[in-house]
Image (cartoon, rainbow, N blue to C red):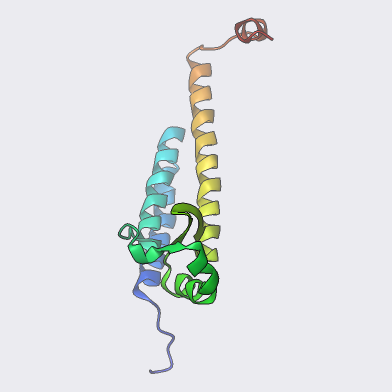
Length: 148
């Protein structure tokens, strides 16, 4: 090598996409709130496709009985970490646990938090739309409607 650090093609794609997202976020400033939410969701979907491209469904190699998982845990962990695969661990033929890379689990948790935030934004936009349209209830009507 010529002394330069080699960057993976996927990393280059993600970096390029993120740079483009910064430019596109300027466009989103002119959108209505619901348009911003849709814009963010579309952008996250594109980024996720590059970071974690869709993979084929699980193969029989990815389904591991608990007894084998106990005996081969080190090898399974190394494979999951190195190859980014996921393993389903079964007990008595039923799935009982999954083995996934810690970075991917962190990523799944981040996605879950982002999904919650986007859902809250959508609800806030819906509430503002209801307020503008006059679809409101007094506190007394709300209490009588829900029996409190």
